Length: 546
Ligand code: G6Q
Image 1 (cartoon, protein in one colour):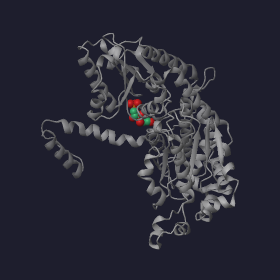
Image 2: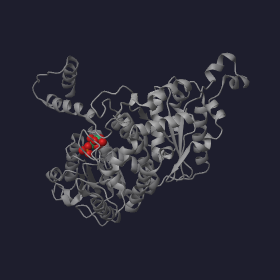
Image 3: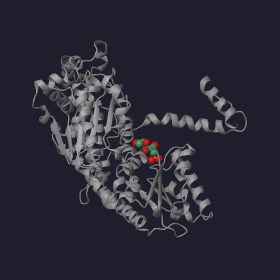
């Protein structure tokens, strides 16, 4: 048995980390900084415009070298190569995992099942660019000859969160003559509110669904079709001018009535939550233009290359993943807070929730055995400074250890007065307060009454990463997303799980399909669920008609 095949908790580095974690559990960051004055410079790393300061983590040189050893013993190098090579590393679905191919430049090659996929990627990108330019220039008109002014993306999960996040993140670069809306929830309110002020003659729907069978998306797409036709006089031909599809399923797209000439494809080796840089990003490309989209792809690619080729001790995604494993598995930490200090990144934490938790929210290893360690923490967050006036209290003085990623930019895209200095002062102040706190002696020295001292004391020793970039550009956004994609990949490799399936979402879907006819039945249906579910269904049926 090679070390890579050894169960995680049996690896030498894991055992050493267990012993070491006991020794440094009570070591305070104040002391760590005193003992290691050079760490502020040493524990930093830089890649394609992103600067990571990870010095405010509860790690010493020994911790880092053991964590790096754990990465080696877990076979990370081989797994990275296997992913980039197009091996079918998503074993439960027997699929390659090749989102990196989506941003591979023309001329390079990645072969899957004997076929180079890079030319296909660029063929779709070129078609997307042509279509985006037509919408942006007004050359593509609606059924009545009016110019398209509203783009509504219909999709859910991986076919929604990326497009929404990217649109918000890159709004500064977007064509302000166009309105973008995103409909995901099967709750009719989502569609109704997204379209209530739109003119069907000026509205284009992008139906984004890898499978083109997802209940939520298909329901919203049918509603959109009816809304469009009603507003356009009922002529079925209108569909061709107001609907395009992004999918891997040409048959279902045709069945829906969308001409496959207006379909933008992708492939089964692109996972939903890794698809925002595929044709699923069509709304993003229409918003920022093909050049902006290509700049974003370039940012992704730069981080891919950094991840693939940089030694682990300077590799940003690897370092961040190892730190998450350190806190999750050796400190019992249960969450990671994502705190972007940029209003444009307001949907970034929501996007990362899917990327991280759908990928690594697993308890079965690749070999079918249950894990005997914790896997993905809960990722959550809000943009700073808003979070500071709500939940930061718990991070500073609560009983839980919550590692934080603070993300900031040196230049504002909207430089108004002193706003940006005020914003960034908070990034630095929060990381400082979290790490070093305020001792009882310091509080006392300020003349605080004795009884109040414990309440006003900050323990500190709360770890954080600070990620800085010069400016939020399409390229930097791509780099930032790829940073977290590869961070998640590294975590998954070490935990020995399949980060690319999502069987956990299936059961609820199947049960909902069973319940739908029970809710719709005109006569009283026979119910065979548990007592609670039966009673809830009956209550809903009694009250729904009121
Ligand atoms: C992501 C998941 C999931 C998926 C949605 C939408 O990795 O697979 O969130 O993206 O269920 O699926 P469709 O694109 O097939 O509609």
